[in-house]
Length: 114
View 1 (spheres, rainbow, N blue to C red):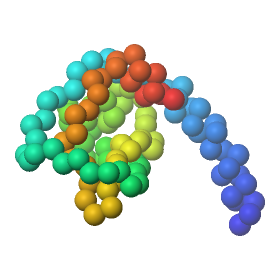
View 2 (cartoon, one colour; view 1 turned 60 degrees about the vertical axis):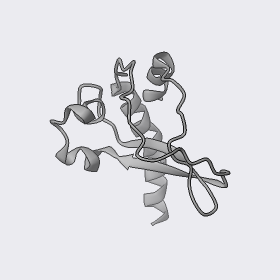
View 3 (cartoon, rainbow, N blue to C red; view 1 turned 180 degrees about the vertical axis):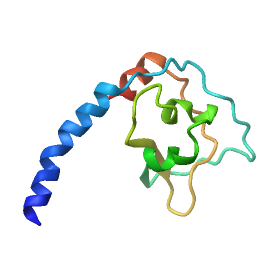
């Protein structure tokens, strides 16, 4: 068992490099407007939840979807584990409908294939 773990540990950097090598950052400059369904809720942040998505499973039924084309079409490379978000959490509730910062296309492109 330890030798299997050692092989996996040795292979991971090359797999990550292969994924970044295949990646072509999309030209996305706008974010769709979403209308809040309630008033903004501001609460003190006590922790964060990191949400991850495994692209092969997520894209299994979304390959033809225009709304998921960046991640699922294959035009921008083949993605594995994708960070969906780092979500703030409160002690008994959670922040909701906080104003997001405007998108930064150069910054987004730089982080897509990191």
